[in-house]
Structures are given as C-alpha cells and as structure tokens.
Image 1 (cartoon, rainbow, N blue to C red):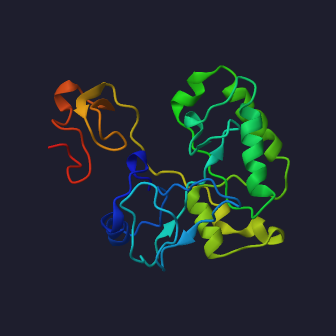
Image 2: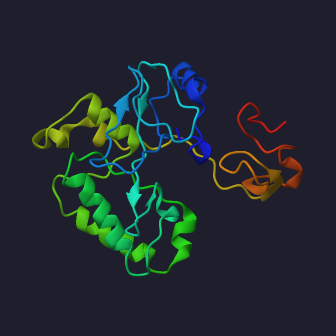
Length: 230
C-alpha cells in the first residue's frame, strides 16, 4: 500500500498492515542518497530516515518496506514521482536514463516508476520519451519490469538469471475473475478549507472522483480516523 501524500501513520499504520496480512508498504521517502536504498523487511526496527512523521518505531514481522528512492531531476533538486520532477521539454528521456543508471551501475536497487495521469498532460513529448526509455531497457537481458509484489517475491527467493524463466511469481499472469466496468455516473466531490497533510498552515481544496452523484459524496473529506468521511 501507499499512504496518501506519503503521510505516514506510524505504528498504527503498520498494525493495520500486519493485522490484514499486507505484504508491503511503499510510503517512506528517502533523502538524496547514493547508492539507492534496497527494499527491506520490517522484521527489525527500520533505520531509514523519517521524512513524513510519524514513522514506525517497532518491528513488524512479515511486512516489507519498499522505500521511495528519490529521482534526481537534473536541476539540483529531487522528487519521488515523475510529475513532481522538473525537466526541460527535451530532457525527460535524460532524466529517466540518468536515474536508471544510478541504480543499475551501483547496487541495482529496484527503480520505481510512479506514473500519474497529469504527468502525460504536462508536455507533449513525455510519452515519446517514456516509450524510448522503456524500449531501450527491454533490450537488456538482465532488466525486468515487475510489480512491487513480484519484486518482494524475488527477494524472498533470489533466483539467478539462468533460472529466472522458471521463476513462477514472474511468469504467472494474474487476471481478475471479475471486474466491475466503469460506472455510468460519476462525480467530483470538492472539499474546501482542508488543512490536512501535506498542507498544514494554509487551507486548501481537495478533490475526489467517485461513482455516483453529488448526493453520494461523503459529508467530510475522508482521512485518517474517518475513512468513510462521516
């Protein structure tokens, strides 16, 4: 799971993960560090820096943390998802390639690529640059595109390249037995004067798209301790 806005919930968050048999969390961001940080098990107390407290201070056996390593946006600043990075119109490919090589040429920690829809609307060339980057990586026989769950499964059972074709977690296509289609009616719920993280000192708006009509919107903005927005 990933906490909204990377806002950690401390040991209460990990108690929920543990009680409900979650495999991993991926909410803890890193500062600029070289080499990047590998995913790790929470069987022992985390030694990772805490950038969005409260962070867990107890061990949580069986739960993994997949830290969000920063991207170097090539402008002397860092970001943790592409739509938060700063890049010139011709440098998205360079940004992706440079950050991949920072992982690949050091300790080969997994490189997460978080994509949100608004990134593709920012500039017309981002899809082209992303496709070029992915096509080039696909030419390497030691680079794989996997889900976070698949990455954890490999760390639980490290398998060499000469046997990776028989590694079941990477060769099983899971298709949902049933999936609801898009809803016929949807609405955008708007909440104002919100001072929840990451904005504390200045009220702001929050938007939530959901199926239904405006009458179906939760009365309050759903958040920690009030997930139903009652």
